[in-house]
Image (cartoon, rainbow, N blue to C red; front, side):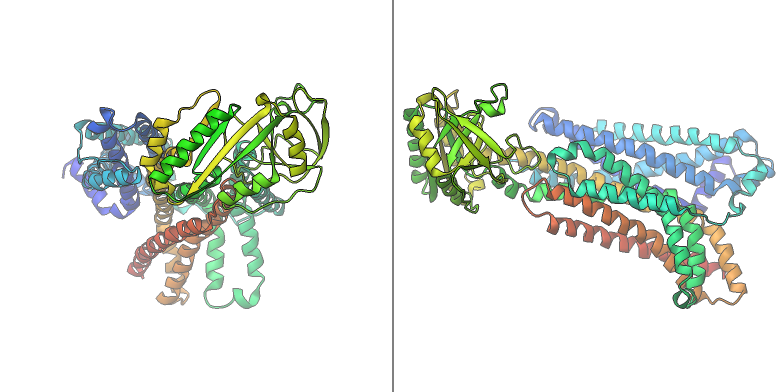
Length: 640
């Protein structure tokens, strides 16, 4: 038998150990290859596809490869740890250090080559579907043809081969520093009795509670400052939850005599205490990876499927026309819009109103206070009808600030009172500020300042004092199925030009921009999220397989004291279920507060899509659990 044959037979005999790592690595190669095939596609290279899309795909490639570095390093280290006893026996039998290093490199090279070949093969097989999905999601006029450039194959094979080989060589250091006796005793190290601190347990709960509160109360402005503290608090809380609080919870359970001494619960709880303590770091990583998967997938899915509702909330009117002054130009453009919509047989509703530009005479250095526009409450309610928003009422001598977008957190006009005056007038009015209106009923525009809603009587007083320079005009139009009226909007774009006086915008234009961005991020993030989820489950599988030899010895001991095979299967099933679903449950809670933070930043409901995402991942987790449990129990049955 040659040295290479010996290495190949080792891989063949130990393929169960390599299975999760092999399939996860192959999937990473598959996803990377499909993205590379897109990047080198002729339509993308020649500029038929927008450059921003290609840049997004390149960014995804970088993320996938960085993740592959982490996962490969962890997996290779786990394999070497699993095989320390084998390496110790080989060293005892006379294998030299250089031969052992060569054996490890050859074995990992075999797995690397198989992963690369499998990944590229499946990538080539699914690239057609990948390109079709991409064409549909980005709504391309002509679908991308099936094409694989040789550069994609070379790039994928070269990068992943170098990655696998480099990390294998780096991890050889852990073997080189161990003596033979240490290698032989690697799996026999006695376990210390689990210890937990009540203070660290309380710290875990405090960190999680603080992180959840920050997420729950965040808006789009606060989120920018809080995202890193939230992530740090949740990671610390999760780690101490496993290392400390879980041990305390199991200790509390041992005092519940009625349940603790029922069936095999005593054995399950006793062994689980050690498993949770030993696997705390792994379970923390798995929980965070799973939570990141749930959060990213849920956020991207909500943004993608909720883009229409979000556009409608940010742009209440399908068409908006604004003029700083110049009523003649404004009415001319309004007539163009009305005539075109009538020619196209589109049933529409519209309303136009006058706005008055005012300022705060006591805050001349405040930009916001010098750029305020007033709208009467009657006109506000008419525009609210067009936008399908509720009416408001205002008492005399009060005003309410209307947010330009539905994003809470940024409130430039606040306080209890405000003073208003109009240019070239000595009139100063003191008003009490009511609660702001968070949902705008006018499309955002640079031609109109910060909008205050005031009582009709007060608005008319300022209107009588207004000049041409302090008068603004707004015209809004609404109609159904606005997203399908591309031809109409194109005709309006050709007839109405923006300038320093006239501003014109359509909901469809913003929707197209939003759809392109959300579609691309969803498409890119979806496959990366799946990769993260598979990696999390693969880490659990590796840990279970790494502990299998020691677990089998314990089950043999249990068999000697009278436990039946059925009872041992029950114990094994419970332990595997807890290791699989406790991280899943905690990750779901983490993601739930992340979804609440998202809900604070978008207009539509995120509940339905978020629940659907969790349910889909739960189904995948159940399938993976039953598969792993079956393999685990079969191993136990073989030695009984």
